[in-house]
Structures are given as C-alpha cells and as structure tokens.
Amino acid sequence: MNLQELRIGNHVLDEDGYVVKVQKIEVNRFVSVSSENIEYPSNVYGIEIYEMLFEEHPDFKKDSQGNYWINLQTHYLKFIYTKEYWYPVYVQIPELSSEDEQQVGLKRIKYIHELQNLYFVLTGDELEL
Image (cartoon, rainbow, N blue to C red; front, side, top):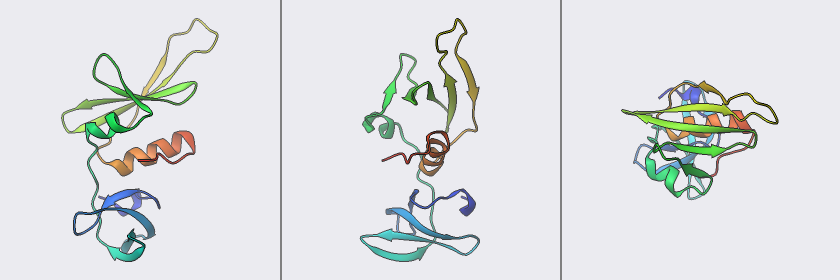
C-alpha cells in the first residue's frame, strides 16, 4: 500500500491488526494513527472491502444482479465484484430527457480507504463506516 493514497480519517489496519483511523501522514516516513485516544506512529495496511460492509451500511443497496450501489442524487455509484477487486461504475441518471443512462467505469479498488477516498472525491463528504 502506498502512503500517498491515504487521507486523514481513512480506516486502515495497524501493525497489530487493529482497525484504526489515520490521524497524521508524513509521506515516506510514517503514518500516525489513533487508537483509544493514543496517537502513535505505525506501519499500516489496507483493509480489503468485504461484501458485509455494503450489506451493513444503510446507504448501500443491492440490485438483482448482485451488485451494490449508492445514490448520489442525480448520479449513483455501482460496485461490481470480479475476482479480488471491486469495479466502481459512475452512472448519471438523465433528468427530464430521453437520453439513456451514461456510465463511466472507474479504477478498480480493493481497500476500504480507496472506497472512502472515491466517495469523498465524488460527494465532498466523508463515508461513515
């Protein structure tokens, strides 16, 4: 995992395998994480996205093909699982027109911090997990 992918607030695993939030990042040196209000430097690892994450989150829905999606007002974000990666598809819903949906496939993701970052880029809000 590349430290440059991380943002403050991302969920990662620390050296001991505990889920923690990133508090501070010093690129190419260390990541500072917080666990029980104690801040310490740590090597961190990505948490793989698992299907239960989508099932347990109230904003994600499952479609008839087994894909998950989240409503973003006039757009939605669909996640298609293939082998070990999730493929996000950004879909624009036509408003008051006869056009079909427009879909754009995005870079595949594997880790929760990538999902959090993608959601933030598209909405400007943090994805609460």
